[in-house]
Each structure stands twice: as structure tokens, then as C-alpha cells.
Image (cartoon, rainbow, N blue to C red; front, side, top):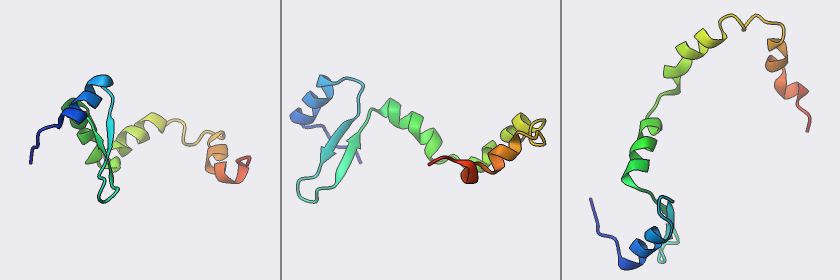
Length: 83
């Protein structure tokens, strides 16, 4: 579905070109963010991305480093983290 912008929304978009516009439904108090089609298309690429698709690249990147003794610090990060 496509709807036309109101003059108020168009003016708000023009006041800050390239920035997202936060809008509120006065009846439900639901908040929305209006972004350009270009922003949406860029975000759309990541929204449906399965993180498991990156596993082979991560494995290749760290192949030589997984056995590095320094990785033990990473493995115990939560226990060693300063609060």
C-alpha cells in the first residue's frame, strides 16, 4: 500500500533532508520511523540476513587464531569483565 504524504510530514522531511522522521499515531500512541526508500532498501538487505551465512567467513578469519593462548581471555571474558 502506498499513501501520499501530508503537507506537515513533507515539511518535516524537508527540514532535515536525509534524516529519518519519527511520527506518532495520536490515537494509539504507536511510534513509527519514516525513512527514504534508499535507506529502506539498504536495511532490507540486513533484516532478512541469516547470521549463519557469515560463519564460513568468521571461521576463515580466525582459523589460525582459535588456538592462540590469548583466545582463553576471550573465552573467559564474562568472568574477567570488570563491572
